[in-house]
Image 1 (cartoon, rainbow, N blue to C red):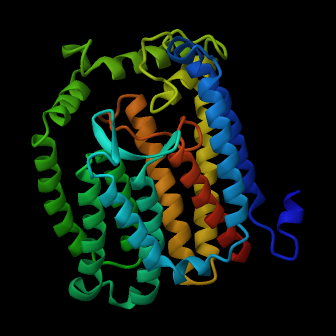
Image 2: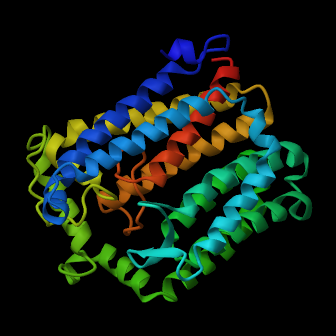
Image 3: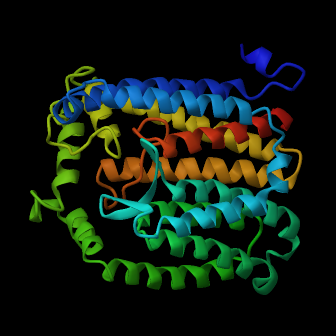
Length: 370
């Protein structure tokens, strides 16, 4: 089937494609295992979440395979239009009555029975635009005025709009991804040191300006100080991972999904995976993500032009940063951020846009000398 889709064209990276399908299958199984108790209680349908996830995967895979046939140079032509569209969505979500509030953040726009998260569009849109900008202006990137500063203005404008929702986790992923791209483009370290200082001051201000963020920090440092409040999620996550041991308690046998770990099919699905499949299962998933990272970097290095290199680098950096943050939260290394685990966590726009990103990466691989 895939050969028919890509006939008369160079083949994409089948190793990467195999990793993606493997992660999607694991994710579908784990979404069902982690959610059937909650789904039965809330919707009287144990398959509620897994059916929707299957639909999201279906739409996302079709979009991924289609985008994989579109020459990646096409995105450079429409980079400005895509970025403008993303900014419009970020502004629309802030309008009362248009943006939907979930988990204390006005981050969603309702579309019929479903909803989309504009910040997910912005992550991909900004990667495409920044790739186009850096490919044309890379020779100016060592200049603060001509290269570095214009890039920062763009990135932090998007970050500011996302913080108005507020959604610190997504904002951090966006900024870190763009900083990786700008650094690889050849920006001066002295500019980054200055930015790091300003960023640290700004980050402290963001934390101190919102009581719930301070609570997350204190809960991270000592979750047992408030075990039924801000420390609840991380404690229950560790209670899930601990009993998993080497082999896990068995698929479907998790105890923490029985209303201990809130909505375990989303941000904390890796905790349920660790409980049911143990250290071996968790390690296998991490190895799959490492292969994804390896293939993505190889595609970037072998891309035929600078736009393709920056595009592949941005996509693989975004996914790697999300994985690192999510797993770090689940095992208690950093405070709770609300970042999903790519391909495994339940979600609509997040999963679909991630698969669209992979479609672009697959297309770049068709032109790379792998």
